[in-house]
Length: 136
Image 1: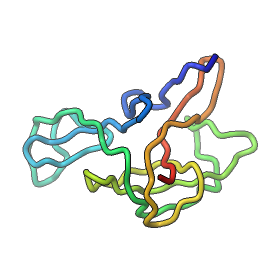
Image 2: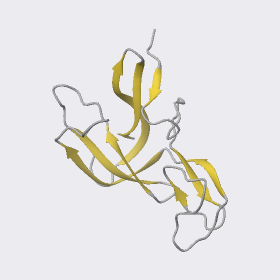
Image 3: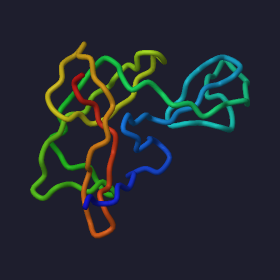
Image 4: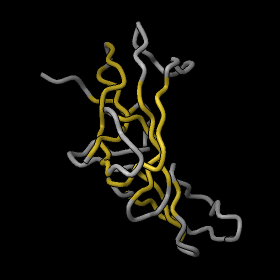
């Protein structure tokens, strides 16, 4: 029996077989946002207030990346001993916006990647999951 999957951040991504980040889009200027914004457009040149929740692209290209060699502070739950992990800035294919996320392995600038959901940590409540980028 598999553990219950619990999103580390509720409402930011789906747990589907093909997971997606959940963003929003301004009806006035067409700007996408992540995390979602449903009150007002954050684009400084727009005064739109009609925003709709929108599933974002599952794929993109690595724009930049680094390896995190230090454990992030709480509330992040790090393995003991800490294991370094990759972080990539990914430009989404359709929305042309950057989304940061952990990587599942080595990536390089220009690599095609896809969104997956992976374990951050497991406790007695279940498997706490986050989105990550995996080479496509």
